[in-house]
Image (cartoon, rainbow, N blue to C red; front, top):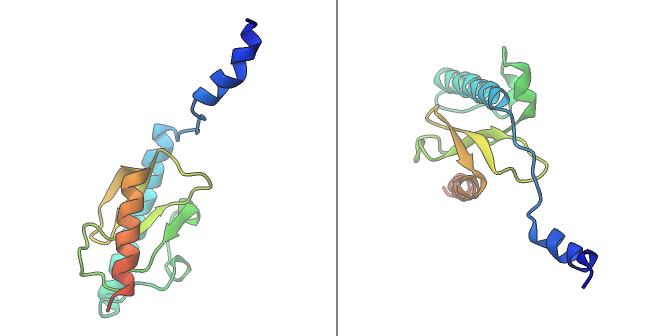
Length: 128
C-alpha cells in the first residue's frame, strides 16, 4: 500500500490547532477585566445597585476593554461569585479564556466550564 493512501485518514485524526494566547496577553486581559469590574461595581454603588447598561458609559477603561464582552447583571446580588459579567471576546471557541464575575474576581476557565456558567448567568438574568 502507498503511504499517501493513509494521509487523509491521518489528517482527520489530528485535532485542529487553535492558537492560544500568550501568557502576557492573558495577564493583560485579566487586568483589563478587573478594571472593568471595578468600574462597574463603582457605578453600581453610585446608582442604587444598578450596573451600567454598557461599557461605553464608563470612563477611564483600558484600550483592551474594546475586546471584551459585557453582560449586564440584572440581579447582581444573586450568586455573584458565579455570575458572569465580562469575558474575552472570541471568534472561535478558545481552549481557555478570562472571565470576570459580578463579585469582582477574574478566573481563567476552560471553555466548557465558561459555557455552563454563562448559560446559568443568562438564565439568572431572565428570572424575576
